[in-house]
Image (cartoon, rainbow, N blue to C red):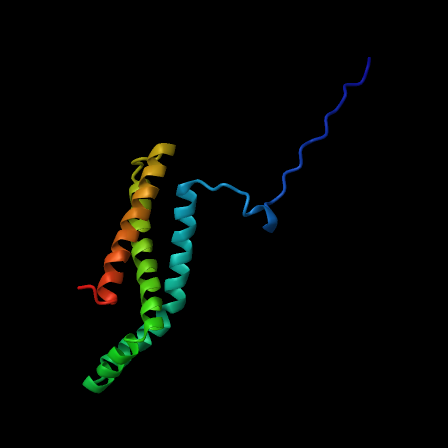
Length: 136
């Protein structure tokens, strides 16, 4: 009997750093990664934010100093980024809670809810930016 010709087994490897830019992640995957990034950003900034809150509540003088600190443009941009992180994390968290109830757990539903999270969080961040930079 002739021996069967064996095909080489395929090798599966992890994605390398060079392949990350070429990898096309679906919108739901991007929202998931942004959810993790925003959570990490909020976690890292939490001690500093609590310190600023403590200092602002000490007295009227410290509150005025805090208002002066927030008037700086770079601090406003950092505040805007942290606001986006909070709003995106909140909206994506609600999305994941809805997905846990087995609503919209198909491919199209996942894409639609991910798009809704991005749109809502960016619109809310735009409102915060307008308020922060004095548009109203």
